[in-house]
Image (cartoon, rainbow, N blue to C red; front, side, top):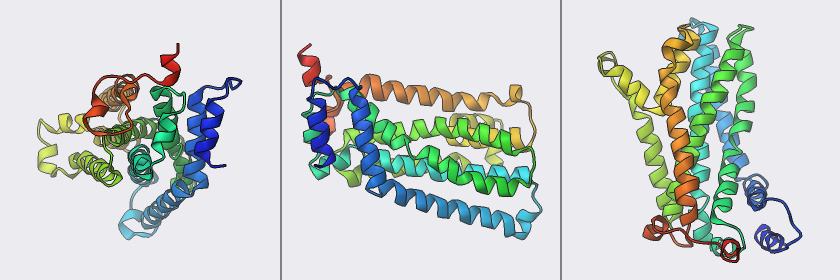
Length: 287
């Protein structure tokens, strides 16, 4: 019995008391991890992180850097790679099912649209914790027993999680609006590349009066700059907290848009229909 039919049978059984989003979440975990898609992406992530760590440990210029500088560079690279993986999984979460013709069976089950979105969102987010575990041994190696390790892990976990929420949520919103998985992946990657633009600004621009606003406006650049100034520059938190505002605000905004506005409007087809009036599930219609 496949996962889809098992989910249909389980959710139609009145004896089941577990929240239905848990059933969707378990289904997503099975497809991502047992199916090998998440594992393959995690292997790619491990290769990219190991190459970065190797270059930091062996490059002559990197050898001149202090342990805290190497820690931050590795952490920034790991967050960037991790966000890309989460975005790819989220972008495929719904448009991919539409293309595989498996979404209709899920939509016909007595599950509210919001619970479907919650389960899929948590499934896409499940890649981030293992990714941080993959980074841990490399950070321990590069830290050379420097006390910077613990603050790096704490702030990296906090900021990485906020950014993972933002990019995973954006990927799901794109996936909900489009029928084509190819278009969903393309648009999500375009958004990802645009988020990297502030870090590519020339130094002359960043050193002007507009520089701090540009850094604070982009969530990824704000997080990277916060890590650099607090962990390497040893700047006090009270002077750099402003760079945490945009990642926090965007994370909350994405969650509100995803679960409050978009989830009830989830349709079998994408396009304009996904942005119009809410749809009531079979369970909600009978209440």
